[in-house]
Image 1 (cartoon, rainbow, N blue to C red):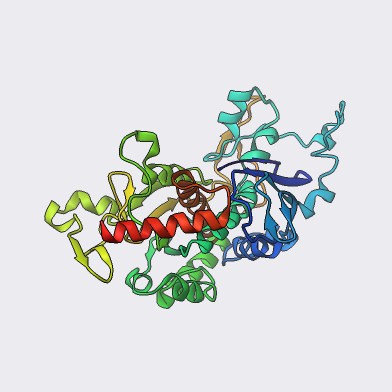
Image 2: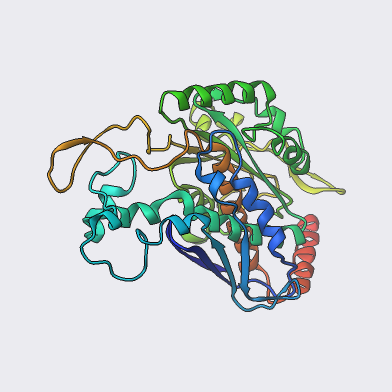
Length: 390
C-alpha cells in the first residue's frame, strides 16, 4: 500500500489517496470519523478544536460500504477555511500585504526558517501552513482505514499516554489489560492515560502550563496485539518492520525519539535481563517468557505484542514567545504567535496509533496475497497455523 496527502492547515481541505487496499474490505465514513473525533480530544487542546468538527468524505474507491480494489480517496474539509479564503486563496494576489498576512518572523522549534531557506519562501506562511500538525488529521483518516484491515485479521491496536511534563504513569496498569480493556479506560480519561492518579496530576500541570503561556510534551505508547511471528524481514535494512514503524512514529510532528519494549533501559541491563526466553506449548505454539524486546527480533515480529513508544517535544508555538530574528530586517523580535495547544500529547497518541496501524497493515499486505479480503484472511489464517506447528 501507499498513500499521499495534500492540503494546508487553513486551506479548503485535506486530501489523501490510498492505493493497494484489498477489495471487499468493509469501509464507511463513520468508521473513520470515530477516529478523527478521538484525535480532536484530550485535555490541553486549543481553540482550533472548537472550530473544526472533522469528518471525512470518501470520494472514490468504495461502493456500497466495501472497497473496490481501486484507489480510495479521502477528503476532510477545513471548516475554518471561510475565514482564510483571502489569505490562503489559490488565485494570485497582487500588492495587498494586509490580505497576504505575510510572516517574516520564524518560531524557534518549528519548520519556519529551515523551510523558508530550503524552498526560497520569503513569506514563512508558505512553510507553516503545510508543516502544521493539522496534516495529521488526514493521516489519522488513512490509519483508520488500515485499522479496518487489521480488525478483519483479528489484530488489535491501541495507544495511551505514559508521561506528560515529567509526570509518569504506572504502565503496568496498562500492560495487564487487553487492547479492548485499555481502550475503554483511556477513552474515558481526559489525557488518554490508564493511570488515574497520574492523569489527575497531568491535567493539573497542563492547566498550570497554559496559564504561563508555555507548552509541555510527553511520551505515548502504542500496543499491537495479535500479530503472527515472522512479519517483516532481516535480509534487507529497509524491510525491517520495526525500522519502518520507528520512521513512521518519528515522522509525526514534534516527535523526537522512539523505543521498543525496554528501549533505552536495555543499555543499563545485562543480556540475561533483556532477551526474551522462548517457550512452546501444544496449545499456543511458540511464545516468550517476557516481552522486553517489544515484539521484535531481527526486524521481524515474534508473535508477542508490539510495544513502541515515542517522545513528543513541547509544541514550539508559545503564547509567551521566544526570541527570533526577522528574516527581512535581521533585527531581533519575539517570535510570531499562531493559534496552538498547550499540550497535544493525548492527541499525538491517537496519531501514533494510526501511523503504526498503517505500517503493520502494509507489512501484512506485502507478505500475503491481498487483492481480495477473503483471500487475505485465508492466507493469514493458514500462516498462523504454519507458525504454530513449525
